[in-house]
Structures are given as C-alpha cells and as structure tokens.
Image (cartoon, helix red, strand yellow):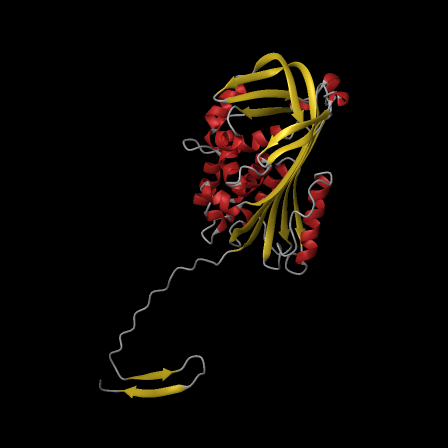
Length: 374
C-alpha cells in the first residue's frame, strides 16, 4: 500500500463520508478504483488523464498497466499452508453491461475480459430497461454473497442507458487466531451521542503495534494475507480525522512492530451507500460526467458516451471469527450530445427582401412587408 493509493482513498473518503463525522461510514477504494480503471481503459485524452490523476497523486498520475496489475494482485489471496487459503475467500467481478445495439469495440471488450472476473455482456436497455437493471443487480448480489442488494434502484436505468460498468467485491477472511467468544462481554462504548453498551471482544497476543502522529495502530492478521489495521486517535476522531493525510497514514502503517497487545475491539457491522459523481469531481474527475467526455475507446468512436451517474454500496462486518465485507460500484453511461462544429454563414441583405413580423407561440402573422428601397 503506497502513499498515492492512500491519497486516493483518503481524498475520496473525505468527500463521500461528508462533514458529519459522528455517523458511521464504509466504502471500498478497491471497488471504486476498479470501476474507474475500467472507465479509464475506454477513455481518451483529457478524460483519461483526469481519471488517472485522481487515482494517483498530485505529482504522479496512476499508470494504467500498474493500476491493472495492482488490482489483479488484490484479487488473489496469499496461499496458506500446503497451498490452501487460510480461512480467506475473495470474489471479484468487473463487468461491462452494454445495450445490444451499442457498437462496443472488440479491443475494449477484450480488455474488460482481461480484468479480474472480467466479462462483457449485452442486455436490452432500450427495450427493457428494468429487466436489464434487475440482471445487473442479480449479478452483483451473486458475487457479493447476497450482501449487496439493489445496487441500482428503480429508475436508475432507463431506455437512454447505453452501458453500465460494474465492479463487485466480496471478501471473507478469518483471523489467524480468533478472538475467544467466551471473552466477549458487554462494555460501554463512548459514542458521540453518549455511552452505549456494545459486545466488546478481547484478546491478548503479539501483534504489530505503532504509536505516532497522535494515533495508535494495531494490525490484526487474517488469512490469505489480509490484515485489519485498527486506528485509534489520541484526540476525538472528529478532530483527528481531518488532519490525517496519506503520508502520515503510510508512515503509521509501516511503523508497526510486534509487541504483546491486550486488545479490546467491539463487534460491529457498518454499511453505507453513496453517489460518486460530485465527490469524484472534487478530485478532478469532471469530464467523465459531461458532454466533453471522451470514452471513444469503448465504442471505437462509433458512438459518443458519458457517465450519467455513479453509484456505490458497501458493507463490513467484524466479529470474533474474522471479517466479511462486500462492495459494488456502477458507472451508468448514456449517449452524449454530439459536438458538431458550428457552421459559419454570411448573409448580406443588399437587394429587395421580405420581412415577417409574427407571434411565434400562436403563429399569428402581424406584418408581412416587402422592402425594395429602404
């Protein structure tokens, strides 16, 4: 995990989660980056540059090949003993859902199929938009083991929809050493609205720990190379969170060293959904949602497209045995208003002419004049 990747995650998180830092929120940087990566693969010129700049950092835009390779690596968990995944499973789907009349370039379809869980499918957005919407939702539900339902709500897809790019992610990872269930007991949790009683898990063992920059971090290892970093600020979270930047977080994550930690961590489930267009615009991804969008790589230039809406859903559960999370991201594409070069004409009225004076709404003709000698 590098600082640029953390920069994208923190930058978009700050815009997605909003100013109310007393409310729980969850999203998947992996899922959103995958959907944007699929869009970048079909984007050209300034549209592509904006996406890659957002996925990288200020001085170094993301490199498409490296981005695709990193996302592919993230879809492969590390093997456990004797080649068996140690209590970890992952499912990833990257799908282009295109209207059956959309002329998708074969080169783009092939690139989509090369992504983890990649597939290019056709549906009838024009003739049966709700049936197409339900097909997308059903596929997301299957991939996410039923955790993400109704990604696209009724009305999100209509007969003008030409294509939808979808990433779906599901991850289940067991702790290398589970929290003893017998040790879990009700304890107070100091929530912003006042103390609440929660089931608090407890364990004492050697784990990676760091304390710096006003934060404490404990890394809890799970199967398949998955870890969970628990970040606890010294100050109130509402005060500390806005000050956390990518460089600080990267240093904090890299500073952990093994010590014996008596960890108390609540069981929890958090879920959220968000529209991505405005938050992404805040990161500089603007053309993708306008008529200046260039997604000509998707259709080989046969039909101009833009993203009309972007939706995201995520859920994460942590308990004594491990963690389970799912997320999905969808980019809806419609036809842009074709940019036709303005035609310039000249008209010199230097000979007799007629002039009409009329009422446009009713068609009433007020005057008709012939002008032969002004």
